[in-house]
Length: 257
Image (cartoon, rainbow, N blue to C red; front, top):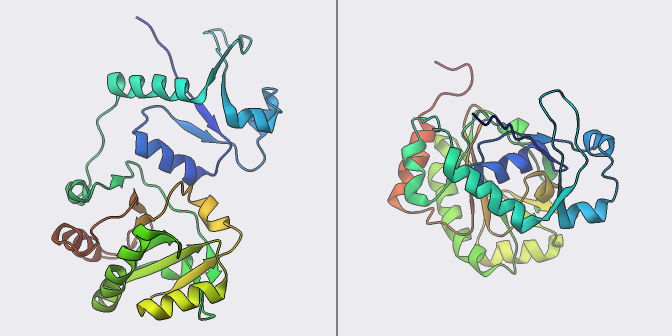
């Protein structure tokens, strides 16, 4: 019987690679080598520019000997091989009470107990928001920009959710991607947005969360776990979304009853 173990090493942050793995439902483990990249350097992959274009494979035999990295393929070939492996060997995923509520919204759930990376930042109205300070709340982190047409349709819906459910423990946090404060302030005034809008002028928070397109939305439970994410717009004011938010709001915070 063929016994092959696959381990992927990523130069991205742990949460960023977890988001990637969950979106593809990869069955094999991914190791984050961020930020020191000690593993990558130990294996002699020193060309940072080349790393972006290709993936390097090392074969290790049962005796622990490392074969030369003779197999170098372009990223799309590696991805295709990974998808084939998923189709053939994908494991059964553990179901949580809210898992059945994710599918109607086409959300990707996190199969393991993943904690989103903490961040803090200043808002457009000079407040300071941090994920640590929001522990015990259900948090919707929405990445957006004023030039994003699909974001424009979501913002009024998120505002309504903020006004209606904030008293029950729902927090909407909009993270603006690489725009100036005055631009964000004008946009917020035009749409009547009152939920916190965090500024991310250098894209640091964007990189932490591995955002690859806008809008991107991450749901965090009261206990601080990453619940699910979506790339692209969703019907956040729909009945399925309300059912999901109600289920998350009904959960106790960590250490609760």
